[in-house]
Length: 474
View 1: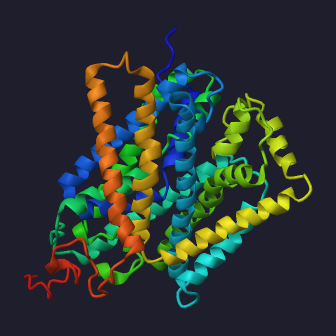
View 2 (view 1 turned 180 degrees about the vertical axis):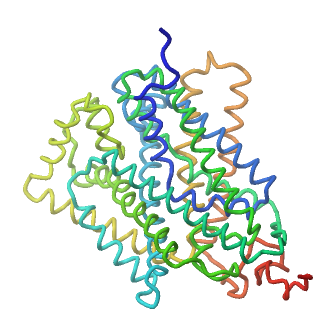
């Protein structure tokens, strides 16, 4: 009897990949269309969807021929490119897993300012949020359950869904005359910068090694990756189009902010706004500590000498050390529980936990300082993280690993496609990192009168539905 297209185990893995990818990056998808217009934004979306899906597929194909000792993303880098490959992958992962919590702090602080108006400043909320998350960060080691990942994912889905509902319904009410939304003032920068957000939105490659080793039939992973990435792309496309079609270039860069202010000519139901924000705050709270843990333990091994006595080939040890995993899906086939206890025992040595706690607290404090400095540049920060680190981890390196492993057998057409993906991604990663980095490190003073900077000058100050201002007949 022929095997089913997807087994129950495959469906669980698809769900896990979906949970890992569905996050804060979805908030800026509609803003991409507001910035680049339908044609260019769709072209960019299709390229990123295809390239990311291909890169994720490449990781799986390489893992199928790699030794069983190759378990984490860092292991894969070393197996394909030697010791420099491990350093590149781990350093890029550390940077990504440090910058992303800064995004969470800035976003969480912004949400709390709106949830509790006339209470604390943005800076105070960032500090308070970090203080409340610090006890979780000081837990010796965390085994992220599939339930936590699902809760974080559903938080994002519900937040996006509520925001889209409020935006569409309220814009329908205020635009009863059917005025067409304005199109953006498209230029090279407005088109290319969507790369940063899309690179941040997509990103499953780090988790693929873990899931593939958990799967009882790893040869099925390439197929289910294609299915999962297709579902993710459909969800992202719906969020993009539904978020922009009623507001055009006046769509904010963050979907949640579209329903939180009266700039678009309506005041959304406060209860639903709060509900949407709470769901996103749930995602941010869960993701902050989970993303941070691999960095904590890698730095503890580097600076404190902890976790350094495990065999280099211990796949379970590397898993706990380097990857924010989704355990509990298929059981523990690699002695995870034993190694998990060994990692905890490392903190039982005299003074070890105190040193680790101090190091972790310092890391959180550094993130708070940077988050406060960049609190007014959330959009640029998200694009910077996506372009500078996520694109390297989730697009460039996976395809490079694949070409290094299968170069003699890869067809000419696929080689051309893969090299083009790497070249385009490298160019856009550098360009967008420079552009957004300038906004972060040398920001220009924004004109408070300009509410919609992505639009042509005539539509930058007043919502397009204001027919009196634009002298349109009713």
